[in-house]
Length: 205
Image (tube, rainbow, N blue to C red; front, side, top):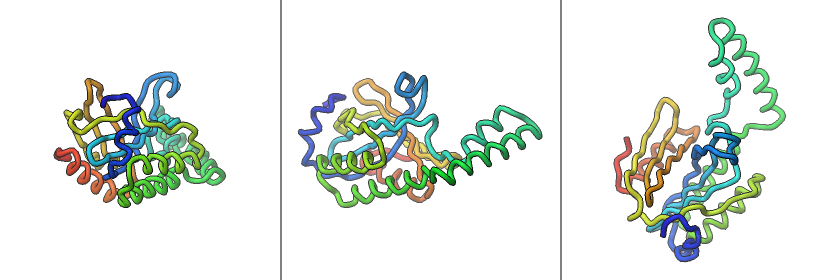
């Protein structure tokens, strides 16, 4: 079926096995020269649907301490400590008034996991995903790629305990894909890795 999203209608009645919220690095105008696009990976009975959104970030989560870490990395010694403290305070003020964006991500992540556990038909699941994300102010939510599992190869699942990431890599029709999955609960990440191992038939590293 390849990368044409048209075939989504052909698999709309397939039952969903797993839905994963993830981030994929892209270089271009959409990411202002380089950044991460939020993608939803929908694994049905025999296909993977990659849903791309208009949610763009300079880095994947966790975002907490991002300003402080970035500023400190460009300094050294006592300057690094002072810089980190300063930007840490600024970030705390921003979070106080704008809330915790990671907490909202976790809620949406859990909603998608719960949706996949109900095993809806793919078409219905895509509608629910669109409704959920648009309520969060994400204007564009659309299928970008549709691949049968037979088209997916060179699958790698990398559990990065230090960065608390699951990295999913594979190729399909000559195109390389790489997605980063983050959740505050490391147990949730390891569970997802095992589920992917069962679906795609690979060993998690």
